[in-house]
Image (cartoon, rainbow, N blue to C red):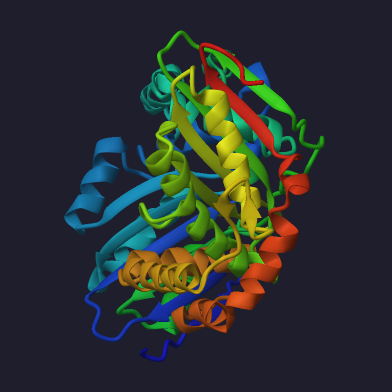
Length: 424
Protein backbone atom coordinates (compact mmCIF):
# COMPACT_ATOMS: atom_id res chain seq x y z
CA UNK A 1 0.00 0.00 0.00
CA UNK A 2 1.38 3.41 -1.02
CA UNK A 3 2.43 5.76 1.76
CA UNK A 4 -0.03 8.61 2.21
CA UNK A 5 1.08 12.08 3.26
CA UNK A 6 -1.73 14.06 4.85
CA UNK A 7 -1.31 17.60 6.15
CA UNK A 8 -3.69 19.22 8.62
CA UNK A 9 -3.99 22.98 9.18
CA UNK A 10 -6.06 25.40 11.21
CA UNK A 11 -6.79 28.40 9.00
CA UNK A 12 -6.64 31.98 10.23
CA UNK A 13 -10.44 32.04 10.52
CA UNK A 14 -10.49 28.91 12.71
CA UNK A 15 -11.63 26.39 10.09
CA UNK A 16 -9.76 23.08 10.08
CA UNK A 17 -8.34 21.79 6.79
CA UNK A 18 -6.94 18.36 5.88
CA UNK A 19 -5.26 17.86 2.50
CA UNK A 20 -4.06 14.58 1.00
CA UNK A 21 -1.99 14.81 -2.19
CA UNK A 22 -2.52 11.70 -4.32
CA UNK A 23 0.24 10.88 -6.76
CA UNK A 24 -1.02 10.06 -10.23
CA UNK A 25 -4.45 11.60 -9.70
CA UNK A 26 -5.77 14.08 -12.23
CA UNK A 27 -8.78 15.20 -10.20
CA UNK A 28 -9.39 16.73 -6.79
CA UNK A 29 -12.37 16.46 -4.46
CA UNK A 30 -13.40 19.05 -1.89
CA UNK A 31 -15.58 17.96 1.06
CA UNK A 32 -16.60 21.11 2.92
CA UNK A 33 -18.69 20.67 6.07
CA UNK A 34 -20.27 23.29 8.33
CA UNK A 35 -22.11 22.88 11.67
CA UNK A 36 -25.62 23.20 10.24
CA UNK A 37 -27.09 19.73 10.90
CA UNK A 38 -30.74 18.91 11.46
CA UNK A 39 -30.31 18.10 15.17
CA UNK A 40 -30.03 21.87 15.58
CA UNK A 41 -33.31 22.60 13.80
CA UNK A 42 -36.17 24.32 15.60
CA UNK A 43 -38.65 21.85 17.06
CA UNK A 44 -41.91 21.12 15.26
CA UNK A 45 -43.83 23.94 13.62
CA UNK A 46 -41.21 26.56 14.53
CA UNK A 47 -39.15 25.56 11.51
CA UNK A 48 -38.37 21.85 11.69
CA UNK A 49 -36.63 20.77 8.50
CA UNK A 50 -34.72 24.00 7.93
CA UNK A 51 -31.28 22.34 7.61
CA UNK A 52 -32.53 20.05 4.83
CA UNK A 53 -34.02 23.03 3.01
CA UNK A 54 -30.81 25.02 3.47
CA UNK A 55 -28.79 22.14 1.98
CA UNK A 56 -30.81 22.63 -1.20
CA UNK A 57 -31.04 26.42 -1.12
CA UNK A 58 -27.33 27.20 -0.78
CA UNK A 59 -26.52 25.63 -4.14
CA UNK A 60 -29.04 27.93 -5.83
CA UNK A 61 -27.06 31.13 -6.17
CA UNK A 62 -24.27 32.75 -4.20
CA UNK A 63 -22.28 35.97 -4.26
CA UNK A 64 -23.04 38.00 -7.37
CA UNK A 65 -24.39 34.96 -9.28
CA UNK A 66 -28.02 33.91 -9.60
CA UNK A 67 -28.96 30.26 -9.34
CA UNK A 68 -28.46 29.66 -13.07
CA UNK A 69 -25.28 31.73 -13.22
CA UNK A 70 -23.81 29.88 -10.26
CA UNK A 71 -24.69 26.49 -11.74
CA UNK A 72 -23.26 27.52 -15.11
CA UNK A 73 -20.01 28.67 -13.49
CA UNK A 74 -19.53 25.27 -11.81
CA UNK A 75 -20.44 23.48 -15.03
CA UNK A 76 -17.85 25.44 -16.98
CA UNK A 77 -15.25 24.18 -14.51
CA UNK A 78 -16.50 20.62 -14.92
CA UNK A 79 -17.32 20.40 -11.21
CA UNK A 80 -19.59 17.56 -10.12
CA UNK A 81 -21.20 18.68 -6.89
CA UNK A 82 -23.80 17.86 -4.31
CA UNK A 83 -24.96 18.64 -0.81
CA UNK A 84 -26.23 16.59 2.10
CA UNK A 85 -27.27 17.02 5.69
CA UNK A 86 -26.71 14.89 8.79
CA UNK A 87 -27.38 15.30 12.51
CA UNK A 88 -24.47 17.63 13.22
CA UNK A 89 -23.33 18.86 9.84
CA UNK A 90 -24.13 19.99 6.33
CA UNK A 91 -21.71 18.99 3.60
CA UNK A 92 -21.10 20.42 0.15
CA UNK A 93 -18.76 18.38 -2.04
CA UNK A 94 -17.28 19.01 -5.47
CA UNK A 95 -15.01 16.97 -7.72
CA UNK A 96 -13.15 18.67 -10.54
CA UNK A 97 -9.97 18.52 -12.59
CA UNK A 98 -7.15 19.31 -10.19
CA UNK A 99 -6.14 22.35 -12.25
CA UNK A 100 -9.52 23.94 -11.46
CA UNK A 101 -9.36 23.45 -7.68
CA UNK A 102 -8.67 27.11 -6.84
CA UNK A 103 -11.55 28.32 -9.01
CA UNK A 104 -13.99 25.79 -7.54
CA UNK A 105 -12.93 26.71 -4.00
CA UNK A 106 -13.66 30.35 -4.78
CA UNK A 107 -17.20 29.46 -5.85
CA UNK A 108 -17.75 27.26 -2.80
CA UNK A 109 -16.53 30.05 -0.54
CA UNK A 110 -19.35 32.19 -1.92
CA UNK A 111 -21.83 29.51 -0.82
CA UNK A 112 -20.74 29.66 2.78
CA UNK A 113 -19.95 33.36 3.11
CA UNK A 114 -22.41 34.93 0.67
CA UNK A 115 -25.42 32.67 -0.07
CA UNK A 116 -28.30 34.47 -1.77
CA UNK A 117 -31.22 32.47 -0.21
CA UNK A 118 -33.86 34.02 -2.47
CA UNK A 119 -37.58 33.28 -2.48
CA UNK A 120 -37.67 31.24 -5.69
CA UNK A 121 -34.81 29.08 -4.40
CA UNK A 122 -36.63 28.59 -1.08
CA UNK A 123 -39.87 27.63 -2.83
CA UNK A 124 -38.17 25.02 -5.03
CA UNK A 125 -36.04 23.61 -2.20
CA UNK A 126 -38.96 23.41 0.22
CA UNK A 127 -41.01 21.56 -2.38
CA UNK A 128 -38.28 18.92 -2.75
CA UNK A 129 -38.14 18.33 1.01
CA UNK A 130 -41.95 18.27 1.23
CA UNK A 131 -42.05 15.60 -1.48
CA UNK A 132 -39.57 13.49 0.47
CA UNK A 133 -41.61 13.92 3.66
CA UNK A 134 -44.89 13.05 1.96
CA UNK A 135 -43.41 10.00 0.22
CA UNK A 136 -42.47 8.31 3.51
CA UNK A 137 -45.81 6.50 3.64
CA UNK A 138 -44.91 4.86 0.31
CA UNK A 139 -41.53 3.71 1.63
CA UNK A 140 -42.30 1.68 4.78
CA UNK A 141 -38.72 0.40 5.10
CA UNK A 142 -37.49 3.98 5.41
CA UNK A 143 -40.42 4.95 7.63
CA UNK A 144 -39.90 2.13 10.13
CA UNK A 145 -36.24 3.11 10.45
CA UNK A 146 -37.28 6.69 11.22
CA UNK A 147 -39.84 5.53 13.79
CA UNK A 148 -37.23 3.34 15.45
CA UNK A 149 -34.67 6.13 15.64
CA UNK A 150 -37.27 8.41 17.21
CA UNK A 151 -37.43 6.15 20.28
CA UNK A 152 -33.88 4.71 20.19
CA UNK A 153 -31.90 7.97 20.11
CA UNK A 154 -31.88 10.88 22.56
CA UNK A 155 -33.45 14.20 21.63
CA UNK A 156 -32.73 16.15 19.47
CA UNK A 157 -30.72 13.44 17.66
CA UNK A 158 -33.89 11.41 17.11
CA UNK A 159 -35.10 13.83 14.43
CA UNK A 160 -35.12 12.60 10.83
CA UNK A 161 -34.34 15.94 9.20
CA UNK A 162 -37.34 16.21 6.89
CA UNK A 163 -39.28 18.17 9.48
CA UNK A 164 -43.04 18.64 9.46
CA UNK A 165 -45.25 20.17 6.82
CA UNK A 166 -46.13 23.08 9.10
CA UNK A 167 -42.50 23.57 10.07
CA UNK A 168 -41.39 23.63 6.44
CA UNK A 169 -44.15 26.05 5.47
CA UNK A 170 -43.13 28.40 8.28
CA UNK A 171 -39.68 28.95 6.78
CA UNK A 172 -38.90 32.29 5.14
CA UNK A 173 -35.88 33.77 3.43
CA UNK A 174 -35.39 35.99 6.49
CA UNK A 175 -35.45 33.06 8.94
CA UNK A 176 -33.09 30.99 6.79
CA UNK A 177 -30.62 33.87 6.41
CA UNK A 178 -30.67 34.40 10.18
CA UNK A 179 -30.06 30.70 10.78
CA UNK A 180 -27.22 30.61 8.26
CA UNK A 181 -25.53 33.68 9.72
CA UNK A 182 -25.79 32.22 13.21
CA UNK A 183 -24.80 28.61 12.53
CA UNK A 184 -22.50 28.68 9.49
CA UNK A 185 -19.31 29.79 11.20
CA UNK A 186 -15.68 28.79 10.56
CA UNK A 187 -15.22 27.54 14.14
CA UNK A 188 -16.50 23.96 13.80
CA UNK A 189 -16.25 23.93 10.00
CA UNK A 190 -14.00 21.39 8.28
CA UNK A 191 -12.64 20.91 4.76
CA UNK A 192 -11.13 17.71 3.41
CA UNK A 193 -9.38 17.87 0.04
CA UNK A 194 -7.79 14.96 -1.80
CA UNK A 195 -6.17 14.73 -5.23
CA UNK A 196 -3.44 16.33 -7.30
CA UNK A 197 -3.03 19.39 -5.08
CA UNK A 198 -0.32 21.11 -3.05
CA UNK A 199 -1.45 21.30 0.61
CA UNK A 200 0.25 24.57 1.48
CA UNK A 201 -0.90 26.32 -1.68
CA UNK A 202 -4.45 25.22 -0.92
CA UNK A 203 -4.11 26.49 2.64
CA UNK A 204 -2.84 29.90 1.53
CA UNK A 205 -5.56 30.23 -1.11
CA UNK A 206 -8.27 29.45 1.45
CA UNK A 207 -6.84 31.91 3.95
CA UNK A 208 -7.25 34.62 1.32
CA UNK A 209 -10.76 33.50 0.32
CA UNK A 210 -12.03 33.28 3.90
CA UNK A 211 -10.42 36.47 5.20
CA UNK A 212 -12.88 38.21 7.53
CA UNK A 213 -15.02 35.11 8.24
CA UNK A 214 -15.20 34.56 11.99
CA UNK A 215 -17.13 33.04 14.86
CA UNK A 216 -18.09 29.64 16.24
CA UNK A 217 -21.43 27.85 16.07
CA UNK A 218 -22.93 26.21 19.13
CA UNK A 219 -23.42 22.46 18.69
CA UNK A 220 -26.70 20.79 19.61
CA UNK A 221 -26.59 18.78 22.83
CA UNK A 222 -28.80 16.08 24.32
CA UNK A 223 -31.97 17.60 25.77
CA UNK A 224 -33.78 14.41 26.75
CA UNK A 225 -32.85 10.71 27.00
CA UNK A 226 -34.05 8.15 24.48
CA UNK A 227 -37.66 7.06 25.01
CA UNK A 228 -36.89 3.44 24.03
CA UNK A 229 -39.61 0.79 24.20
CA UNK A 230 -41.89 0.21 21.22
CA UNK A 231 -43.49 2.29 18.49
CA UNK A 232 -46.23 1.24 16.09
CA UNK A 233 -47.43 2.94 12.92
CA UNK A 234 -50.66 1.46 11.55
CA UNK A 235 -50.60 0.97 7.80
CA UNK A 236 -53.06 -1.16 5.80
CA UNK A 237 -50.78 -3.58 3.98
CA UNK A 238 -50.01 -7.20 3.24
CA UNK A 239 -46.55 -6.62 4.71
CA UNK A 240 -45.17 -5.97 8.19
CA UNK A 241 -41.96 -4.00 8.56
CA UNK A 242 -39.97 -4.14 11.78
CA UNK A 243 -36.80 -2.49 13.03
CA UNK A 244 -34.83 -3.29 16.19
CA UNK A 245 -32.22 -0.78 17.34
CA UNK A 246 -29.78 -0.79 20.24
CA UNK A 247 -26.87 1.30 21.48
CA UNK A 248 -23.47 0.36 20.07
CA UNK A 249 -19.85 1.57 20.31
CA UNK A 250 -19.11 5.10 19.12
CA UNK A 251 -16.40 5.92 16.58
CA UNK A 252 -13.40 6.04 18.92
CA UNK A 253 -14.45 3.11 21.13
CA UNK A 254 -11.99 0.23 21.35
CA UNK A 255 -14.92 -2.11 20.60
CA UNK A 256 -15.96 -0.40 17.35
CA UNK A 257 -14.04 -2.66 14.97
CA UNK A 258 -15.14 -5.91 16.65
CA UNK A 259 -18.73 -4.69 16.58
CA UNK A 260 -18.44 -3.88 12.88
CA UNK A 261 -17.14 -7.37 12.11
CA UNK A 262 -19.97 -8.96 14.10
CA UNK A 263 -22.46 -6.81 12.20
CA UNK A 264 -21.15 -8.24 8.92
CA UNK A 265 -21.35 -11.79 10.29
CA UNK A 266 -24.87 -11.37 11.63
CA UNK A 267 -26.56 -9.30 8.97
CA UNK A 268 -24.29 -7.59 6.44
CA UNK A 269 -21.82 -8.33 3.68
CA UNK A 270 -24.08 -10.09 1.19
CA UNK A 271 -26.26 -13.19 1.53
CA UNK A 272 -23.94 -15.38 3.60
CA UNK A 273 -24.75 -13.70 6.92
CA UNK A 274 -26.58 -15.49 9.71
CA UNK A 275 -29.82 -13.52 9.67
CA UNK A 276 -30.31 -14.05 5.94
CA UNK A 277 -29.47 -17.76 6.22
CA UNK A 278 -31.44 -18.60 9.35
CA UNK A 279 -34.47 -16.31 9.10
CA UNK A 280 -35.05 -16.11 5.36
CA UNK A 281 -33.42 -19.08 3.67
CA UNK A 282 -33.92 -21.90 6.18
CA UNK A 283 -37.27 -20.85 7.65
CA UNK A 284 -38.83 -18.64 4.97
CA UNK A 285 -40.07 -16.18 7.57
CA UNK A 286 -39.36 -12.96 5.69
CA UNK A 287 -38.46 -11.65 2.26
CA UNK A 288 -35.81 -9.23 3.50
CA UNK A 289 -33.60 -9.04 6.58
CA UNK A 290 -30.32 -7.33 7.42
CA UNK A 291 -28.31 -5.49 10.02
CA UNK A 292 -26.49 -2.16 9.85
CA UNK A 293 -24.22 -0.22 12.20
CA UNK A 294 -24.02 3.58 12.27
CA UNK A 295 -21.14 4.91 14.32
CA UNK A 296 -20.71 8.56 15.21
CA UNK A 297 -18.54 10.79 17.32
CA UNK A 298 -20.71 10.61 20.43
CA UNK A 299 -22.81 7.46 20.03
CA UNK A 300 -23.39 4.43 17.85
CA UNK A 301 -26.57 2.60 16.89
CA UNK A 302 -27.12 -0.86 15.42
CA UNK A 303 -30.33 -1.56 13.52
CA UNK A 304 -31.90 -4.79 12.30
CA UNK A 305 -34.62 -4.54 9.66
CA UNK A 306 -36.94 -7.26 8.43
CA UNK A 307 -39.92 -7.26 6.08
CA UNK A 308 -42.40 -10.08 6.51
CA UNK A 309 -46.11 -10.91 6.29
CA UNK A 310 -48.43 -10.07 9.20
CA UNK A 311 -48.93 -13.80 9.85
CA UNK A 312 -45.20 -14.48 10.21
CA UNK A 313 -44.10 -11.19 11.74
CA UNK A 314 -44.03 -12.30 15.39
CA UNK A 315 -42.16 -15.48 14.53
CA UNK A 316 -39.72 -13.46 12.41
CA UNK A 317 -38.97 -11.14 15.32
CA UNK A 318 -38.49 -14.04 17.72
CA UNK A 319 -36.11 -15.78 15.31
CA UNK A 320 -34.09 -12.58 14.82
CA UNK A 321 -33.65 -12.28 18.58
CA UNK A 322 -32.49 -15.90 18.84
CA UNK A 323 -29.98 -15.55 16.02
CA UNK A 324 -28.44 -12.39 17.41
CA UNK A 325 -28.37 -13.64 21.00
CA UNK A 326 -27.03 -17.01 19.85
CA UNK A 327 -23.73 -15.49 18.78
CA UNK A 328 -22.93 -14.82 22.45
CA UNK A 329 -23.38 -18.29 23.93
CA UNK A 330 -22.67 -21.06 21.44
CA UNK A 331 -26.14 -22.53 20.86
CA UNK A 332 -29.55 -20.88 21.10
CA UNK A 333 -32.63 -22.97 20.25
CA UNK A 334 -30.76 -24.93 17.60
CA UNK A 335 -29.15 -21.85 16.05
CA UNK A 336 -25.36 -21.98 16.19
CA UNK A 337 -23.61 -19.19 18.04
CA UNK A 338 -19.97 -18.40 18.58
CA UNK A 339 -18.21 -16.95 15.54
CA UNK A 340 -16.48 -19.63 13.50
CA UNK A 341 -13.08 -19.29 11.88
CA UNK A 342 -14.67 -19.30 8.43
CA UNK A 343 -17.13 -16.54 9.36
CA UNK A 344 -14.38 -14.46 10.91
CA UNK A 345 -12.09 -14.78 7.90
CA UNK A 346 -14.87 -13.97 5.43
CA UNK A 347 -15.99 -10.91 7.41
CA UNK A 348 -12.45 -9.53 7.78
CA UNK A 349 -11.69 -9.98 4.09
CA UNK A 350 -15.03 -8.38 3.16
CA UNK A 351 -14.48 -5.40 5.46
CA UNK A 352 -10.97 -4.74 4.16
CA UNK A 353 -12.01 -5.18 0.53
CA UNK A 354 -14.86 -2.71 0.99
CA UNK A 355 -12.49 -0.14 2.51
CA UNK A 356 -9.95 -0.48 -0.27
CA UNK A 357 -12.42 -0.63 -3.18
CA UNK A 358 -14.69 2.13 -1.87
CA UNK A 359 -11.71 4.25 -0.91
CA UNK A 360 -10.08 4.42 -4.32
CA UNK A 361 -11.65 7.70 -5.47
CA UNK A 362 -10.58 11.18 -4.46
CA UNK A 363 -14.16 11.69 -3.24
CA UNK A 364 -13.80 8.83 -0.75
CA UNK A 365 -10.45 10.15 0.47
CA UNK A 366 -11.77 13.69 0.96
CA UNK A 367 -14.89 12.46 2.74
CA UNK A 368 -12.82 10.33 5.12
CA UNK A 369 -10.54 13.28 5.92
CA UNK A 370 -13.48 15.51 6.85
CA UNK A 371 -15.19 12.73 8.79
CA UNK A 372 -12.06 11.84 10.76
CA UNK A 373 -11.41 15.45 11.72
CA UNK A 374 -14.94 15.72 13.08
CA UNK A 375 -15.28 12.36 14.84
CA UNK A 376 -11.67 11.88 15.96
CA UNK A 377 -10.01 15.26 15.86
CA UNK A 378 -7.22 13.80 13.70
CA UNK A 379 -6.94 12.05 10.33
CA UNK A 380 -5.96 8.51 9.35
CA UNK A 381 -4.40 7.01 6.26
CA UNK A 382 -6.09 4.03 4.67
CA UNK A 383 -3.40 1.81 6.21
CA UNK A 384 -4.28 3.19 9.65
CA UNK A 385 -7.97 2.51 9.03
CA UNK A 386 -7.25 -1.11 8.13
CA UNK A 387 -4.70 -1.78 10.89
CA UNK A 388 -7.27 -2.33 13.70
CA UNK A 389 -9.04 -4.94 11.57
CA UNK A 390 -5.74 -6.79 11.10
CA UNK A 391 -5.22 -6.80 14.86
CA UNK A 392 -8.52 -8.56 15.53
CA UNK A 393 -8.50 -12.24 16.42
CA UNK A 394 -11.26 -14.82 16.42
CA UNK A 395 -11.00 -14.99 20.20
CA UNK A 396 -11.29 -11.22 20.66
CA UNK A 397 -14.42 -11.09 18.48
CA UNK A 398 -16.02 -13.97 20.38
CA UNK A 399 -15.12 -12.36 23.70
CA UNK A 400 -16.81 -9.15 22.62
CA UNK A 401 -19.88 -11.03 21.36
CA UNK A 402 -20.26 -12.81 24.71
CA UNK A 403 -20.76 -9.49 26.52
CA UNK A 404 -22.45 -7.35 23.86
CA UNK A 405 -25.05 -9.64 22.30
CA UNK A 406 -26.60 -11.34 25.31
CA UNK A 407 -30.39 -11.82 25.56
CA UNK A 408 -30.35 -9.33 28.45
CA UNK A 409 -28.70 -6.60 26.37
CA UNK A 410 -31.03 -7.26 23.44
CA UNK A 411 -34.05 -6.95 25.73
CA UNK A 412 -33.22 -3.23 25.92
CA UNK A 413 -33.47 -2.82 22.14
CA UNK A 414 -36.08 -0.43 20.81
CA UNK A 415 -38.65 -1.88 18.39
CA UNK A 416 -40.67 -0.09 15.72
CA UNK A 417 -43.30 -1.73 13.53
CA UNK A 418 -45.09 -0.40 10.46
CA UNK A 419 -47.94 -2.56 9.19
CA UNK A 420 -51.50 -3.73 9.86
CA UNK A 421 -50.82 -4.90 13.44
CA UNK A 422 -48.39 -4.39 16.30
CA UNK A 423 -46.16 -7.27 17.42
CA UNK A 424 -46.50 -8.92 20.78
